[in-house]
Length: 564
Ligand SMILES: *[C@@H]1O[C@H](CO)[C@@H](O)[C@H](O)[C@H]1NC(C)=O
Ligand SMILES: *[C@@H]1O[C@H](CO)[C@@H](O)[C@H](O)[C@H]1NC(C)=O
Ligand SMILES: *[C@@H]1O[C@H](CO)[C@@H](O)[C@H](O)[C@H]1NC(C)=O
Ligand SMILES: *[C@@H]1O[C@H](CO)[C@@H](O)[C@H](O)[C@H]1NC(C)=O
Image (tube, rainbow, N blue to C red; front, side, top):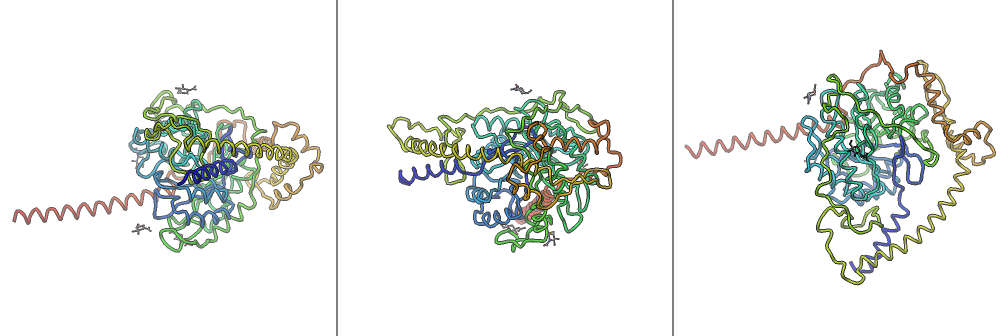
């Protein structure tokens, strides 16, 4: 590359950083875009049958898939692992181009906390750090999971301190490297036996607590309801929770065809004040039979056929666009949970103090040197800003004006120009938003009709087109006095009002210790993804065993021939 090319490339990167997709942040119990809008997850698990680590490496395929995934209304994909040594640039860009964020597990089938022998080792820590290094630069990286279904009550709760140590150490690493505050959380099995795990991951201070809690729940099958499915329990358990909570996998397929009716509850008035959406399991049918498309081949390439479930999900989501609150109008004062007490039947974490963790600290890592004013995005960059690798800090500060310095000046100039334009745009938008906010609140309230279902619980009845109508009604003069009062008493948002209504109908006097005498408890079994993974591991082990046996037999034959 010539110097000029390098300069142009650097300027382009700076431009993309300034106009790219907004990042996602955590504030209280909600996600927000860096533009200040609340973010609800409409996600789909994205994996192909034949790979376990090299997801997001086939750029051409990602372009095909990203368009089709975006057309469902999705804004998030979940992948279970990536290989940070491979380039993800093209795929991450393909999804960013469709306004789709990526949530990823830091573990891989090789590097993970083993639930039966939980150990957080330096080797594991360094591998997880590499995943962070490989993904942090993408603005459409939504969040990271420290583990998926590692802890299953009651018999693998011993793994919980290791999982929380992952969270604590990786948050510390993220901050040491001056990466943005990428949310780091956990994806849990829905055992519904207690809130111990949820409380455990949240307790203590912000340096060790999870940034969010994801739950894998397949409890709502077919034409179920808020109460029948047990979602009401999930909702109750999120009361006053101080970090975002969402379903990191959902999509029961016991009753077919699947119609994703649970989305009405999750994204509608019934739950959207405490839940931040969900991720549907999954995209490709071939893997597990839960998919919504079929590829023409087993390696999941080419243009897939859309199954009826694809259309079903698409039409479901098209009616559900919760607006939520603006970050600026939201000042949470929520407390962290107390650490759960150890009980042999449910929560067998032995340490007395739930904040004592087997953390490893940051030994061996070094903070980046020099200024970090330019953040990488999208792709097309080589090398890392990470100061962790010693070969990165090659001296070279002696020359008068190296290419780096010139690039810095150019980037600085471009950034300054962009900043001025952005500020101007933002000021204009803020003016517009001021006028729009009242309308938004009204829109939020509108789709809920407060009907009662057979169980005496408010059932969400989405009225198609309600949002569109409200958003079209730009004229603030149309708003009646009731709504105007909302706007004046800023702290009483419609979400909170709904919460009160909800409690009034749904609650008894004893809200903090809800009793569910006749609730069907879901069987405590791993999610279809984990089961499929286990199946693959078994198959691999069997193949290995066969290979070993054959080799042994061959050696024995050779041995006997030699003797004979
Ligand atoms: C947990 O229970 C399951 C099934 O009951 C069993 O297969 C597994 O080995 C147990 N794990 C531990 C760590 O005891
Ligand atoms: C957070 O809690 C941990 C564990 O109890 C403690 O070591 C650390 O000093 C605390 N940090 C802050 C900022 O309070
Ligand atoms: C989806 O996958 C399952 C399991 O492999 C299979 O039984 C089913 O026929 C597939 N559905 C379609 C429409 O291909
Ligand atoms: C996965 O790919 C390998 C070759 O890379 C092939 O042998 C195998 O059949 C494929 N498995 C599936 C399920 O497509």
